[in-house]
Length: 119
Image (cartoon, rainbow, N blue to C red; front, side):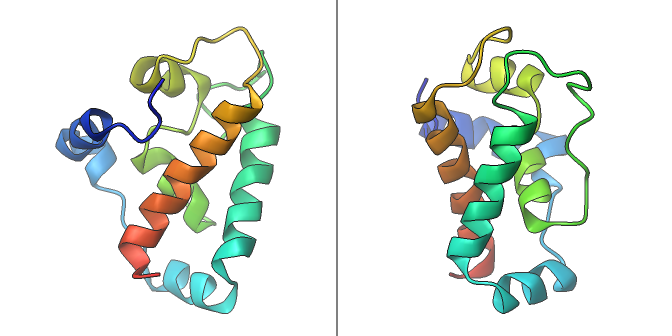
């Protein structure tokens, strides 16, 4: 799987869609108000609820584009839906995510936020 694979990071950086996501002032203020552990907990909750189940009713539409820094990170890192997880990380649809995959996805999301917020 290789959730933090350099190859995947390079491919994401070359994607016009994925590379356009940025944290704005509202996101930065939120990150400053909360600590990174809180953001990490939120990421875990979002992944458990919106990605971990084997079948999702609204797969491909479950992650908003704004409203929380984690949402932007999910789109930037292609961890926003099961289709993207399958395409970018080779995690097949139709089965629940493993605990290791959930932790890996959260780590990718937090790494992206950390890189862009100097935390």
